Image 1: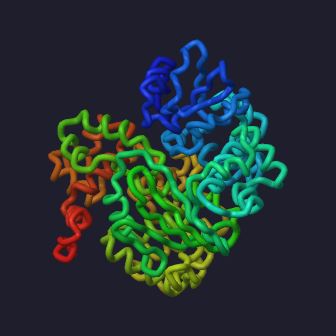
Image 2: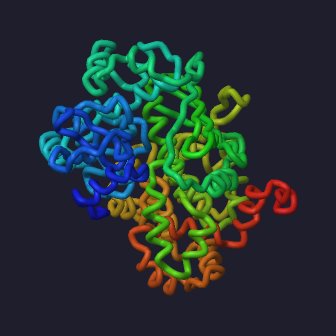
Amino acid sequence: MTIAPMTFDERYRAIDARDVRFDGQFVTAVHSTGIYCRPSCPARTPKAANVSFFPTSAAAHEAGFRACKRCLPEATPGSPQWNLRGDAAGRAMRLIADGVVDREGVPGLARRLGYSERHLTRLLASELGAGPLALARAHRAHTARTLLVDTDLPMADVAFAAGFGSIRQFNDTMTEVFALSPSELRARRRSASSTAGGRIDLVLPVREPFDAVGLFGWMRAHAIPGVEVGEAEAFSRTIRLDGGPAWFEVRQDGAGRMRLRAELASLRDLAPLISRVRRLFDLDADPVAVDSALAEHAELRPLVARVPGVRLPAAIDADEMLIRAMIGQQISVASARTMMGRLAAALGESIETPRGPALLFPTPEVVAERGVEVLRGPGARIRAIVHAAGALADGALRLGPGDDTLEQRAALLALPGVGPWTADYVRMRVLGDPDVLLPGDVAARAGAAAAGVPSDAAGLTAWATRTAPWRSYLMAHLWYAAPVTQAWRAADIDPSSRKAAS
């Protein structure tokens, strides 16, 4: 999906108003100074004739501009375009953020997208103003700046955690991008969290409004016992990354900020982890655009007013998400949690975390080999789950944030036991696709009825076309409008009512 880009005049009005909503969505390059800024930069608005706009900081770097030392344009939420766009450029940006170029190089990125290296480089340069190497370089610089400002990690650890191949490359890139050396950037920090033994503590910027109640409530309601811990204002879990097992916790840290604590086996996994956490919590969404579009419809206006800044929870691990979705088919959330907790307890690997012993969700290989020993329910469903795990294990099926949405859906529907609800739910969660409707979802249909929206599958499908391209966010509002969800939302808003709600 492609959203119509802003015009020059629309962007210029945004920088003239210093509108923070557009920070991270584009950068403003000023020819008279040779720097680029975030839209809300407090400096005097440059003349329109002296301005060029770029979709990425990498494009501004490639054009010879340097980051503004006053507004630090890299210290913003990311662009929502990379979740909205389903074209090759959007898919490439998601994979670059997930560390594919650092791990597999440009050949690996091109292979995943189905292009030759030359064609991919030409396509990205045309669409985004920079090729894959420059885009990956800008992403490394962004990660390194965050670590320099928010932690006391040694310089060498910052360099390798951000994905740089050498200290020299790190020093040269940071000086070129920011016109400040790494030590000068670190000297500008306000405060920093201590780090030790692979533990990280840093801030993640967020666009407001942000529906923390709904998002943390969702995570808690779906948390797998032993693997995940959901609380009213925090969520933590274990995860497997390339360098080994990891643990992280995300906690609300005031308006416009979330705090990420993590313990990693390898610091090289930090940049991919940050990217996955930002996607998990939909931190790069444009809530004003979503809310404004949905509130145009009278039936949804009360829902948007009640839950401003709704977010779409994504998936931290694509393979795990498919197994979870298949287990959760046609059973309650509570029953699915019980079954997944049993699966993790029997087949998961135990690790130590800052919260004590925890479990890693079992790999597809283990589920394929031993799932029938643990899973309960209809035999056909168990066989379907084990078959899907086998396809993931042997590479016959590959899922990830860089998938083409229609190709992923077709591949999932080809699996035994996977119907439209499961395929579309996985697509919504793994890709962060903003325009997925699940007309057969029982909770969403209950929410539709409560909101005065047609609640039968055909009627909801027809009515929802008017909310494109935001039907996934419509689903979130309908879930939160359902009576089954209202109890825990009310309990989190008013903790004194939590006992009654439970």
